[in-house]
Image (cartoon, rainbow, N blue to C red; front, side):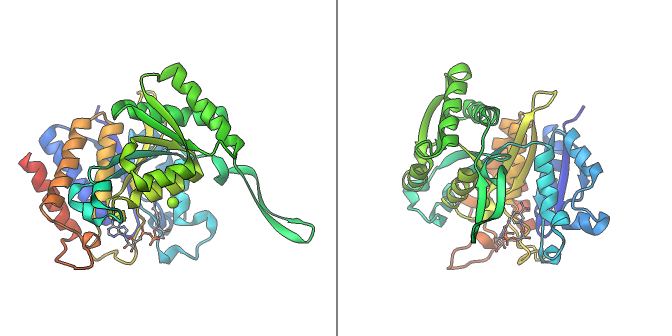
Length: 366
Ligand code: NAI
Ligand code: MG
């Protein structure tokens, strides 16, 4: 049977960028014999409008059952005053939580044509291709106890950084598996110098490496030094694995080495399913961009590259993923730019659809 894909385009520019991905999915069906069973549903504000909840149980069940979920973006000013429990992002959080997506993959890749766009010197970033694996379901954002409590005469804000061995081991495995498909190199980042969770992190990553992945080169770095090294000489890294909090910061930092939010894909992976593939959700890093929604200005590349990640990590179609990434690279090399990729000097940007057309033309050209 065909591989299955659930599309949740969401709100704002979500449906606009997803429309371009759908054309690309159709292209792979028509030209490469790669046909997906695609189903579509609502998530976020649009799901709240239709059903009073940002994610229905039926959509949640479907997400559990398909080979991969592809999400656009959720949210918008229209929904800002909703109760916390039905806010658009709760739909996304529910997907991540119930699918138990513990490994968040954030590539930072520099397309040559955009190297001038980086805030760093061109030669520091040209050719950059690294992957940050952030633990996504545990750590200080979830640890108990938490809260704001009264101690004597003042309030105290409390969060707890807490990691179990198995939580560290499973995300370490994700990083090592990924390294085997890339350049066999992992750098693990924590602060074992000042944090107990960091000490355990380093121990467990080392144990998993010793037991199962000795063919992969492993190094360790304190996360603060890692931040420095990422801006000084990012090309020294290949796969970086780190906890939820450090990963949040380091992946945002790494992302901006390469330019626009409109270019950045991501994947969130969970435990292997019966077919051996991980549970997976793919989505652009950006949000619903209400400031440009409905104007045909959105850059569809982040969402398109998220689909390329799905081809590679959920469907074992690394060659087809590379073909799609090359098509993106080629249109950029030709000078095609959506508005977000224009420097202060300006120029004439292409529309969302115009960018989709150009990428499809490159795919046609082979
Ligand atoms: P945002 O990522 O939506 O937009 C930030 C800026 O980047 C805006 O100026 C926007 O126009 C621009 N931008 C983003 N994606 C772009 C693209 N593909 N092409 C061209 N320009 C692009 O973040 P913001 O403004 O903080 O949040 C807007 C809404 O999105 C909020 O409701 C927020 O909660 C939601 N959001 C949703 C996320 C998700 O669905 N995963 C992630 C981040 C925010
Ligand atoms: Mg962040």
